Length: 396
Ligand SMILES: [Zn+2]
Ligand SMILES: [Zn+2]
Image (cartoon, rainbow, N blue to C red):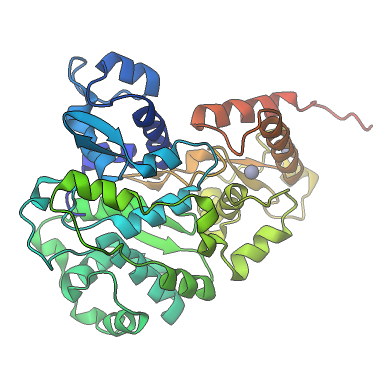
């Protein structure tokens, strides 16, 4: 966990991981021509043009359990095969899987070879459980990222402890060490930001904020645990083993969040039903994310029909919805400096919002898909929907 590559944080984003999963399934990432890799993935891999992206970037995709190496070639994992299929899983499902699979040390890194038995910890599972225990047990939703790191250092927990252990630990917060005294824990912070792609989390300044009910936090706490079983001594074998634990969407019941969030979803006017759409709507209904967005961009204009909602409905404060422009199953992307990427969201009036989703439904049905393949397709169809709206007052 503490060795994530800070300069390449954007490559840990879910939409990029999906793009790479598709590439890795079709081609040998290690031995394919560098310019072809750039062209096929539309990613620039900031490295000299002559260098294979494999050299500087394979570590990222190994950390995310998409690829392993055997006899000099790059082989897609089971997780990559599932992820490469459009609409098969949601961002939440994949990030929760990475939470359960990620270990310290990681089989993707060289210190795996020096591993002594019994010294494996699950830092992401620890971090998420810490956040969930805080919501479920103490009704506290905001946590400084440095507090999680201090708790990890102080507790020695593996990530498989019970809720009572976490509550004990939370009671000892005043004893946590000041981790900034041993240098800036930047890499640890980056990996915690990574999990904020989950739809009920987001970053605000140096804090991570949870936006879910206490019951949901309790349920999710009890449904995550580090993946167990005998470890392989070879890192590549271990990546392959852990990746085989990732299952397609039909097996993940606990993502059907109960409590307040789901009831918000069911009240919405959209034709949901699939988990892909639910994740999308959970992000759009995230009150805290919404406040964060409108504090930053207070304009009352619908980006679709250009209506000034403050003129038309002067008595309502903020009637605009937030629409999330990435593929329906995407989480909110994370910017390593500023936290959540608010640019993936766009304000539209509730009528346009419903119409846009109707447009999406028609498009996906016509193309026999559950979801958009990537960010570009999602943006293109959003643009088309916007273009198709007839401007002006036609009911005068
Ligand atoms: Zn509108
Ligand atoms: Zn929407």
